[in-house]
Structures are given as C-alpha cells and as structure tokens.
Amino acid sequence: MAFSIFGTQKLIQPVGKHTRQAGVGDKANSLATLQKLGFLIPKTYTCDWRAYERYLSGDMEVIDDIRKELSTIIESDKKYAVRSSSNLEDSMQFSLPVNFNRC
Image: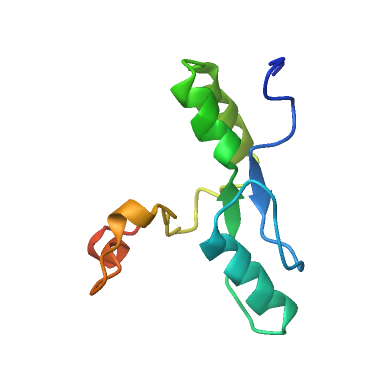
C-alpha cells in the first residue's frame, strides 16, 4: 500500500478517548468526546476522509486497501451497523440512516 500523495497511514481507525480526530467528521468526533467524558459508546471505527479523496482522484486501489483493513477488524460471527457521516443524508426533521438495514 504505497501512494505518494496520500501517505500510508491506516484509513480505518477506532474512535479513541480524545476530543478531536483529524480526517473524520463531527459525528465521530462527538462520539469520541462522549467517550472521553465517561459515556459508554459501542466500539466504533471511522473511515478517514482520505479514502474518499483517493477514490475521487481515480485511485481504485483504495477499495482493496479498505477491504484489507476491515478484514483485520470484522468478525464474521458478529453483526454490525454501518453509519455514513454525510450531512447529505439528513434533513432538518429526520436523520435518514434509521431507514437503512443493519447487517
């Protein structure tokens, strides 16, 4: 996994006990803040915005890079909820991800 423009840092990172995480959105950073304040949150991972930038630049290798990273995290006997952090999916009245299936 070598790409000169974007570096070699992992794209999938756990939300840690810190207040801000570079490369992720406000929703993930809010979860990290809640965790730091002592609230229990489910084990949460974020996909860095660099993955999207790589994809937009035509670097299709990013898909395999994400798959490889997820294969070290995902356990086949567990269920997961996948949540996009895009503001485009929400409206003033509803948070639309509740309409998606959980796997």
